[in-house]
Length: 214
Image (cartoon, rainbow, N blue to C red; front, side, top):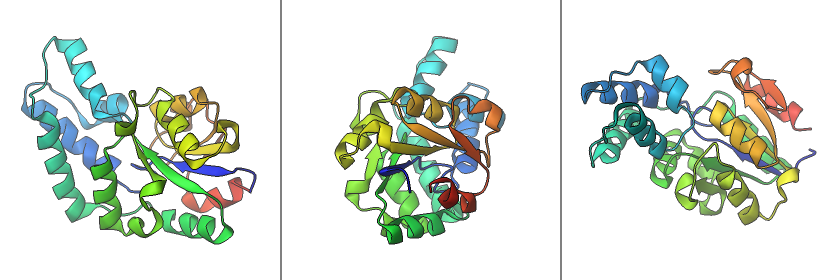
């Protein structure tokens, strides 16, 4: 394989959480007076850290979200994860292949450490990710589309940015990877390739990924 580090986004790439979390986010925002459809949530917030939700709502309405917004939302999301969350089809096989081939990999997610771990425990992906392989937007000052998170992950893993490839499914994540000077493979299972501007390559099935990495 031609890369020294494979950096995975988490939501929508490793765990099939985007439909769950965006459905709940749209419903909660609507409930508290900020009408939002599922499609709005996907367009505006997919792949972003929670501060983007706060920033966009304030920018558009002049109003702040409730102080307990994140806690309430995450409580609903974690409960739904326990009921519904599954790994992305093919993700386990990809991780097993990387591990067998000795290729370094990690996850760099806009989600909190708690969200990543809850999802990995529910789906069984925790066996593939020890603490040294998990990086969150909580670890850096700015989330995607800033490059900080991916650069932080590469530095901690001891790999130069140009030797990394990022696996992403959101426009914000692709922007962040490009800004970090990394190749990025756009996963198009939920997001059309036309929205993942700047991606190095595209794929729609996780089964394709090992071949793309060679």
